[in-house]
Amino acid sequence: MTTLYFSRFFDRSFEWFSTSGLRVVVIVIVMAVLLALVKRAIERFRGIYAGTFPSSTQVKRADTLTHVIRDVARVMIVGVGGMMILSELGVDLKPLLAAAGLGGLAIGFGGQSLVKDVISGFFILLEDSIRVGDVVEIAGVGGLVEEVRLRTITLRDLSGNVHVVPNGVIDKVKNMTKLYSYYLFDVGVAYREDVDEVMAVLKEIAAELQGDPAFGADILEPLDMLGVDQFADSAVIIKCRIKTKPIQQWRIGREMNRRIKKIFDAKGIEIPFPHRTIYWGQPTQAASTLAQTGT
Image (tube, rainbow, N blue to C red):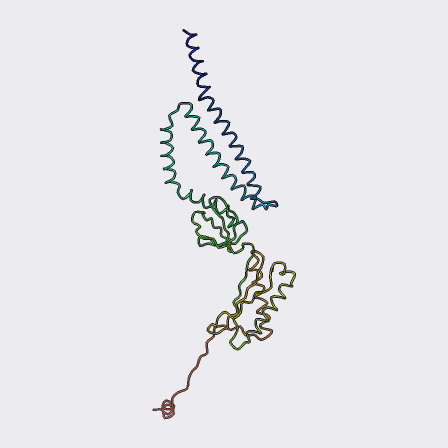
């Protein structure tokens, strides 16, 4: 009896190993190969994305992206492979799939904002629209980008306040320091001034500023004179701009404004400002006669 039992057990085991067992081994081997291929592909992607001479910011961005892609790929491979193995072991997957579907639905309803933040952050990192060190305006706040994460972006404004913005609420990005920057000047002068002479003076000031060792290295091109832009109530507005390295436009602009004020004062070029003239008027002849007669 015992011999017959063991004989049937070995026969069934051999039959299972020759069919389902063999398929399980093949599934495990395929899973291992796919995981190795994914790891190699992700490392290659990371090297290409980080660049030949990566900065610390670029390396951090590449690490974040590759970790996300790697984790998603691993979950998919292990999940699909695990279900195939369970199926070969004779486990009924219908209750598991139903439970997983309900759980995923509950998580989806409860974590919609989190999923939106992560997906938006992934594409922000992938498209390289925001970097650490940029000055940006997003979701109604602006400041220096201190940290770019998969879920949030951290900004610090000029007053030192820290703003943490979830990536899911970002619908528009205003990056003021991407590759290069411009400082825009709206210089108002009095109507009596010769605008051609004023524009020539502005070009001279910008040329002197570009020749200054303390500022010239941050100026990329000579002053771009756009010309007379508008006629205001008490001034003619001359518009021009200067191209600088990223995040240096405000420093260059402040120094340029300081020099414009000094040179304009020295040359007698009037910078108009709002003012009011009070006119007392003259009394009428009848009023003068009544005042003299005392009537």
